[in-house]
Image (cartoon, rainbow, N blue to C red):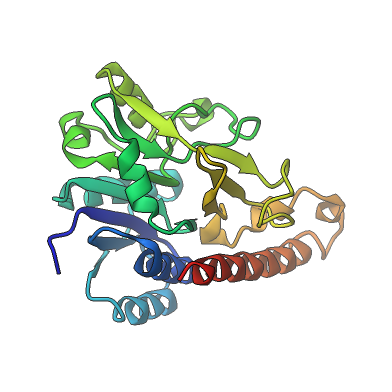
Length: 269
């Protein structure tokens, strides 16, 4: 195998089904040579066993295990700060475990977007769904960047102020722009607002490239199964139903989301 052109990084926290999808998608759709490093962030023993079984099928996937000292965004940021210094390829890809690129040769398309000015390309958060987070620069859900430039900028992925949108990887926008570099983003469409896409009916975010092709999709809140996305309806006020119904809906949504992803991948193989 040729020396890898890029390294794909993802953090697993009880999301082995999503990691399984990501690895399969990369195997089928990536054009360039690549390697993958997965950081397990303290999953259950059952999840760890399942993850070990999954990665055994690949000869270019490495897994490291850590017990996070802080949970949520802080734990995720710690894991990414551990992973990124391990990268020695020209390009780095960061993927949330529940975000997957679905367009054949997506890696080549992203690399083509980089130039003397643009050093990072990827997924923003949808306008209107962002809270205080910026919508004009790639976020960590799915992004490719120039490894050398990133390391020169001395970026940390740790959050600073969650209440003001300075969540995991908030320094990306600040430090790239301050150094005179630009970021290229995809068009983000929340299925809460746009239901005509392939994933209509499932609460998630679809991403489209300049030619309006679906290039990526983000399930969102994968480590908890997406339950929080379905706790906004009338049943949250009904004793006995406030937890049962969201769990049931989320479980079904996750199953459908995974199935649609596999279908889209296999259509291009």
